[in-house]
Length: 114
Image 1 (spheres, rainbow, N blue to C red):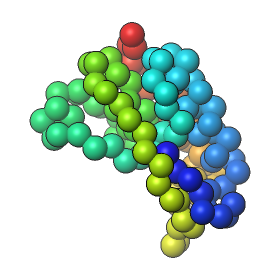
Image 2 (cartoon, rainbow, N blue to C red):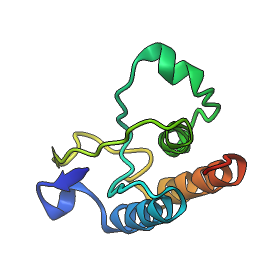
Image 3 (tube, one colour):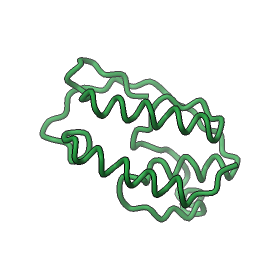
Image 4 (tube, rainbow, N blue to C red):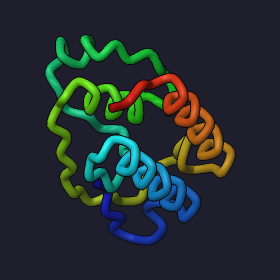
């Protein structure tokens, strides 16, 4: 889970969207997820076996949904989230955040979850 070091580290619109998404994931698959950050750690072969198809902003969500469906143990660890150097294509703009929301809606629609 990303823990912003300063309010400027993570724009408000992105925090709100992430909180809503994490709530939806918790509600659907009963995984105590607080953040849907982009980092996942798994063995390569196991990750490939999940048959993840999204190559954009829906990738982190699809990974979590398919891993939960496969019975994987999902653990969230807190990490300091500091301001970026440069500008994020996703969280740096409202447009990027809205595109990520669209991508993730598509993933929710295609993934069958337990």
